[in-house]
Length: 303
Image (cartoon, rainbow, N blue to C red):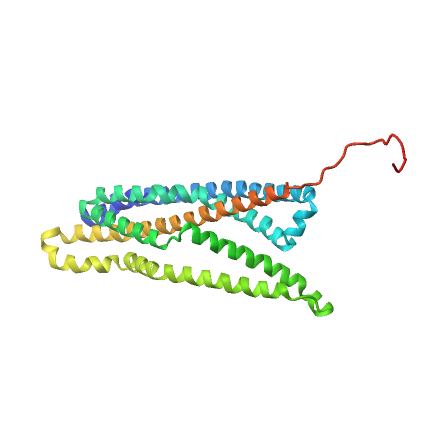
């Protein structure tokens, strides 16, 4: 579809062939519409798979709670248990539903864009290659370290669990004047989460501003050398076509990089959700209740 757009602009701007441009425009619209339909269908199937996975994980958690020991409920607050099962099961749904259709586009699209850039001209290809390398470096600067992201996720999980306990305990505190220790934990969870969230947002601020400035201001940056070397580069029509393709393909790269960031986020959250659920399920199996299978007693004596 993107190649057909290039051929359409070439027919329209370079060759001034309106009849040929009209047929190519129709083909490009059909191709891009077909791609959007295929993406929608793949997203629909991946969402169905994600809902089934989420349902099965919730069932697995309920089955584990039925067989868990009293020790498990003493060590784990009910609000934290509910949060771990519900939120992490929902998180796996988000990962599966969006990761499968987005991952292919996020990886394949930049490669095809670079290939199309070199087809247009060597200048367009080099500019897009440099843009891809710089964008990748900025993208890497915005990604947090795995250890930091783990601490961030744990603080968010603790905040959600303490919020549930806080809401549940409000009436008890008001009526019976119970201990407000949970309130202190809730306040500490809020402060910890706000600190990690604020630090991470500050670490991403400068790279993200540079990232947007690079992609949104690319044409303005290129105009400066083009003004000085226009006569030695090519005709005005060719330069116009190349600028339009750079503007168009850089926008495609921008969307692809954003999908890569979302893809990396879903991968990180999915790994954390699965590890948390597996740890919870494993903890449920410790000292679990053992049920007998004797249906008839031989005698009714106390001894």
